[in-house]
Amino acid sequence: MMIEALIAVTFLSAMVVLAAPERWAAKLAFALSLVPLVGSLWMYSVFEASGNVLLGGPLAFETKVPWISLGEYQLHWHVAMDGISMAMVVLTTVLMSLALLSAWTPIDERRSQFYGMMLFMEASLLGVFTALDFFAWFIFWEFVLVPMYFLIGIWGGPRRKYAAIKFFVYTNVASLVMFIGFMALVFATPVTTLGLPAITEALLAGEVSTFAGIAPETLKLVAFVAMFAGFAVKVPMVPFHTWLPDAHVEAPTPVSVILAGVLLKMGTYALLRFNFTMLSDVANTLAIPIAIMAVISVIYGAMLALAQRDLKRIVAYSSISSMGYVILGLIAWNMYGVAGATFQMVAHGLISGLMFMSVGVIYNIAHTRMVGDLSGLADRMPVTSAVFVSAAFGYMGLPLMAGFAGELFIFLGGMQSTALPAAQVFTAMAMFGIVIVAGYLLMAMQRVLFGPFRADTEHEIVPAAFHDAAAIVVLILLVILLGTVPDLFYGMIQDAVRPILAAGGGL
Image (cartoon, rainbow, N blue to C red; front, side):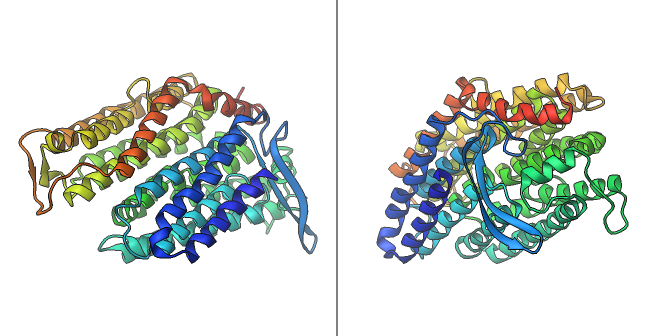
């Protein structure tokens, strides 16, 4: 019952913070967020699973009890963890606590509501990464969207309403498309449950019949495309990416941290669970189109970042590029590729959080994020500048940082892939994206941090607040720790990936 306790404590914490006085909300929310954080770290310390939640084997903290009967369908409350979900749960709890700490400076109104919604979103995210019945999983998936909509729409920038509505429309339509594709598979299989393991077993056994006059193979292809399109919006992949820059630019810094660090991982996590595990044969058939989309996301996202002048928009577009690497690792369909892609989800979550926090601190102090309005900050803000440089190096994939390990695994997987035709060509093209990433980040660093001091602001340039510095220092240490000791996560991720590849012919 540990997973239930983790979700319940976080949800109750959200309720307590919503009812708390404004002056207590920030510190109370941070203190309460430490409870699921400590709980997830304890679960990680005793974690012994070596199976995969959709394919069986030893799992961790599993609970399965009957829940609701819908005609012939029996729904269960079914939660469990394997190495993949364990990594995502730890990432969620760590980033949420640090994001709440970084919110003390920029959030100065309606604090109880802000922190309450952040914790409510955390509870929903924990459900997404642990639920194994589609009914519960979909509820948690949709519940993530609601607080994010309000967090952008209420506490965002000047165009917050436009960004919030665009985010909600894109992601909600994507959910509908994904839902239709998944339901078609359910009705075409002989299962009488919405349990994801049972549906996976039926699909891998080839127990798919004609549905609505559509032949089984065609049905699987249509369902794969529908689910892929729905999850690709959340990732986001080009051309489904246009909601992301607006959401990031208008969202307050703590929300951007969670949006880039965890919410985007919902898309890649779902792609791995649904498309690449349940329908691995279709994924292999569509390997080339998916690889093309991944490489376009890497290169196009990086080129768009290169053309930006707003530091936050630069980081936003660079996330599109980074997620392209994750998709390329998945389609490589070998241990390095799939496990490396999962590891990169965690690495990018930490590094993108670090980047957004450092940009947020610069904005809180200088009151501008425009590259053209800033110069020579290294002399006035040495600590913040050092953090920005560290985050940028992490994004570039500097050795001994988490990004290097993740990208290295993915490139090794791409170069050794036998499932993806011309995999070496796709991988080499994607590697060129690193050069572009280094280009725009070095350019931004040179213009913002060095040269004669200039900041077009009437506000005094002061050092970063202690709580802001504490949050980003912790993130830097985590990025270095995961880069120097990747097996903290990589080993357990491999254990969960091995059954996927065995079932899909990738080993």
